[in-house]
Image 1: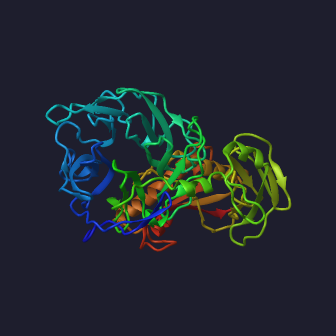
Image 2: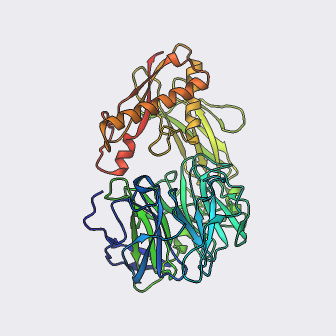
Image 3: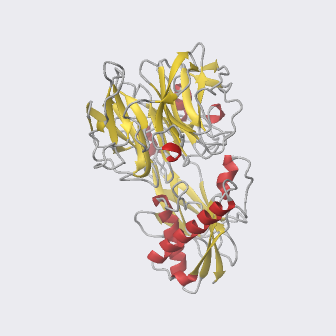
Length: 519
């Protein structure tokens, strides 16, 4: 990754109704050509800890997925050169800090450290009198089991931990959960944060502000500027399942790249996060510095945007969550051809249960008494889909892809763990619908095509795309489809459907498609 100048961004942030100007501050001394992740200040605010991956200085060398590094804060947003944290906290596995207790003498860590325990766990370390840290010991959070990527952050008072991972009750891939400290070494069973926060895609890198109500997190499941954007939401009650509608932080923070790990520093005048903008896929730590005012959640804006009901003049007004459930009785639903945009007769039903209903006119009014509900929709000659209806009173238009010979259809919900051929659980829903189409058309033969962006060697790209297509074929075979009906091809980066000049468009090229070879 080329990095000639890495600096703070000049931005204006609305905070409690005030416009705050930020100044440029170079970060060359903290960032590197490797991957910087998960920055944390200690409670005193004088030390910056973060994780750096793939550095030859890591305990596990260039293949190490992350060691803890530290930089001394010299003044405001000026820092010393970073160095790996000495001691036993870096061990060749993925090591990250997830937070501290209030005094700063207990550090909570990602990774169990003990070989007899699952890697998908947490640990703690205590600060010694000489400033060094004790050998990590397992943290009492035994009920959290996650697939793939996982992580957490602990609030500034050390009382609440917000976790992410593909765990129980997931709505798709990684979801957010909350756990409460029983004592310094033991935590409660995690609670799923509900459907207003969690989507069928990925919600990651949460940060809960000191009020225990304002939640920042990154997601690719809510509408955003790039691959992962930072959002903010407010907790509405003590169930931890009811939240205001997540609000995108906008271009102040979010770019066409991937932004994660947003949080506010101890003094409240410095916010930090990571971004892949102007990089080759690796993250840099970035700061927003305010000389005069404290950062706070944009309360006024969020109040105006809490669960809303629009009248015929599209004017919005705030409505409490309980009133909203009573106010919204029926929501408009329609289906259209993805190519021609013409209306289609269709059938629909709740995903979990219920009978299929018919909308011959191409429009329906759906009874709805909650915050969100997953629906299935199908039409003759089209690929069926699932979608999440949300209680925002806006019309829901679902575009369906027509099944035609030699027409390539992108399977947008078929996702893999980064750099691997392992299908995310969120992919299963769309693949089940493809299985249904194939079973309804027993003579149909299809091609599964894997595609990548233009980064990396041609050989590696071709291999990855070919193997991902094969993984989809294997899933179909295990679902009862004769594998002789499925041809696979790996196209690598040879057939882009978008520019490879930015992360926003490159991600469109990383895809799996299918096309019908014979009906």
